[in-house]
Every structure is written in C-alpha cells, then in structure tokens.
Image 1 (cartoon, rainbow, N blue to C red):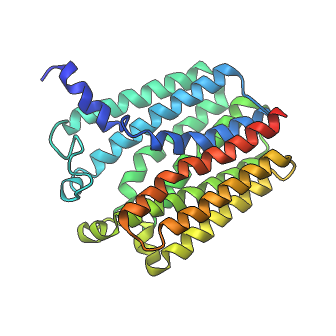
Image 2: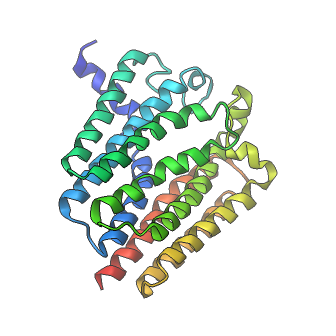
Image 3: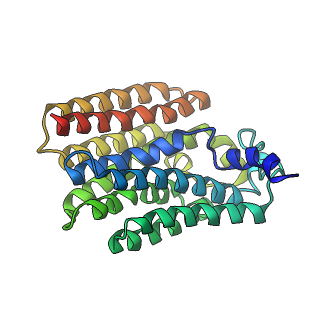
Length: 286
C-alpha cells in the first residue's frame, strides 16, 4: 500500500476526525495563556501552543492505540481503530508517534525559552505513560488529568518572567478535577466492556457512587477556578455560571447511566471549557 493510500489510516489513528480531544486539551491551555498575559498572549506564543496542542493530542492517541492493541479488537467501539483492525502496524505507529513529538518539540524550541523547553520534557513522558496506567492504577484518569494540565505551567513560563505559582496550581488542580469528571463520564460508557477485558477506570473505582463523585469533582473544578479568578469581573462570573449550568445538565444526562448518554455528557464538556474561556476572554477584553 502506498503512503498516499495509508494517510487516511494515519489520520484516523491520530483521531483528527474526532477533534473533541483537541478542544478538551486546548481550553485549559488557553485559560492559562489569557491569565498569564492579562489578555491575548503574543501571537507567536499562541500559535505555538495551539499547534503544539494538536500535535501532542495526536501523539497521545497514537501511543494509546499502541498500548491498547490487545484490548481494542475486543471492544465494539474500538475494534475498527487502525491498529486494532490491522491497517497500521505497531512499528509505523511508533514512527508516527516519534515524528509528532519531534514536531511539537521543534515548535517549543522556536520560542527559545529554556523554562518552556524544560517543562516540555515531562509532557512527552506523561503522554506516553498514561495509556499503560490503565493496567495497574485504579484511577488512570488522574494521570490523564496531570497530562492535560501540563500545558498550564508551560503557558505561564512562555509569557511571564515570574510565574505566579499560586494561580498556576489552582488552575492545574481545577483542570485535574474537571478532567477526572469528564473522563469518568467516558469511562461510564465503557464500564461493562472494561470490566470484561480487565481495564481499570475511575468509573469502576467509584462504582455506584460514580454520579456523586463526578458531581463533587465538577464542584471542585468550579470552586478552584473561582479562586484563581477571584479578582476578575462580571464576565468571568457569568462564564462560571454558564459552566455550572452545563455541569448540572451533564449530571442530568448521566442520571440513568446509559452509555450513549454518558458519552454525550463527555462531549458536552467542550462547551464547559469554552464557557470558562469566553468569560475570561470577555472580562479581560473589557
């Protein structure tokens, strides 16, 4: 098969046809950039972080499918993924992962900022580590939360000389709570099959308390965001209110634990992240 014929398989392997993961990784990075800059970050920095987010999310999807190649053929939702279906080999997937990481690192190098370069190294490690934690950590979503929060200190390091670690840690803790909540929705959709094949998840760990746990995590995320932006104005709080309403809506969606509804609640978190950013953007603009 020619390279041109294989490109659609690589596209699907990187999940470019399903951009929800890009948005969920991008929103907290944009929060951090706007917090750090007090408005729009310098355009070169913004471009690097947006493109870097796309590349690292793609790399994460590739390494995830490499790690899960023994599980995916046995799950209805994943058996058609390129590696599981035998359309892409493990060796060429590893090459693709390396190329994506190298491209992302090249973008980081273009900033010529030693702190950002240093912080980018754990980001690659976290992206590679997360898929394997599903075998031996009860709540691998916590590792995903750290991975999806790592762009926050990188964003601050790219914009300001003196990093306000109090704000950074509040934003990271808020995002960690949010990620664990929405990825538990995702895991609730797959719980029966995960139990069958032996994959661990927060949905399995929380058991019958899954709805309560996700509600507490969402409340924690909103509370920590409120603390991080406590000196901001009415548009910020309007964004918080909108995000809170979306969280309530998601809890209503998962009330019967229907897998399709849980997956819709997961996807709905794109709007949660957008609401927070819209409030921040408008507040700093005005």
